[in-house]
Image 1 (spheres, helix red, strand yellow):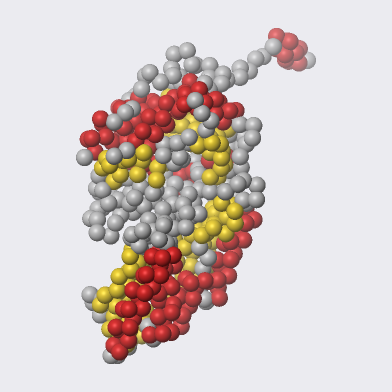
Image 2 (cartoon, one colour; image 1 turned 60 degrees about the vertical axis):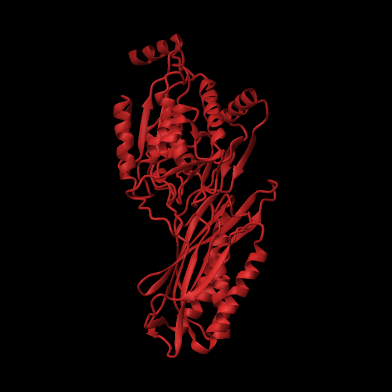
Length: 506
């Protein structure tokens, strides 16, 4: 089905995206994509650098007549979020993404599409490959591991590039130009447990929350989407007291930057309580459906006898700590901006809970446009889990990107958009994390904007790209490149040269 993409316009960018879909590129496992980009550069006779971490930096000379323009960096990340529906058989380390055209949108068949940020990579490659695109000197930076740690941006060496104008091609709303983003960090939790014999005269049941939309923990955190970890915890929390439930397993969510779509638990119930417990779970499902009737129309909770009956459960105190911690752990919007209308300032995401050997591994992520608020919500998460006798640690995190009201490239982009489409673009900040924050931290004074075609449902199997906006994204990018300012020329005056000679004689 991927071949159908080649019929779409503009052909250049869709051709590159079709090639990218065939290359496995999970975060932290981008070796095949790195090799693909290296071979692409060789095939197109493009100079490139491969940094030690795996980042690829391609250098492209200006087209004829544009040699005097400032060097522009086109920047995108090569990795993708790997999420799939539970019934979908797909190996992200081996299998290509199966693209499906549905009306005005491009989807994937039961998996994430990888348009985040495969479309950005495709856009940059298409610019290089198309001799009709007018541009000054270009540097195309393709980073690794943006989705699970921003490792590529962190390890990017400023000595490997010289551009001071950067177009980040990793945004998801056509018609919007982003000039700032939130900073973020992760808080990692371990709840230790012991095992004890499963209770007698009891039956193990599997309880599953599914059918949720999931989504990006930055862009979608304010959309009142349900978190599967929180819903499943609500069921288990009350059932522990009412039905003497004994927990064996809890597995929910997958990625630090995705809202949990599915969660499942296995727990023992006394035989005399089983029928009542099943009715209770269905009542909870009805309550959830009412609470999320608009945002989660396919929400589903199932309860059934577990396919295997384990002979152990986790100890009572560990169960108490885990469920209380999950219930109390904050999730969602913490504060809205006081200066930007309808803009999320601070949030936190209860991303995943996984049972490991001897402990439950809980991953949360915090975001804020204000550094002190980011640390504050991280401390709040730590305080909750400390009360649950858990081990807690924070990652170093990444800085936010402060808007530059005097951005030259933003002014150029706004005028280009107005001329091309006859309307004003929205210039705004985003609550998601972008590599611009780290790059700007490494290179003070870098003039940056971020833009892209319209994507929806990113970081979930519902990820899709609005086809018509890819043409708009392409035209907009080409117009910006055509209007990049002339580089300043450093001149040495005769007077200075003479003075230098005089000094030498002395």
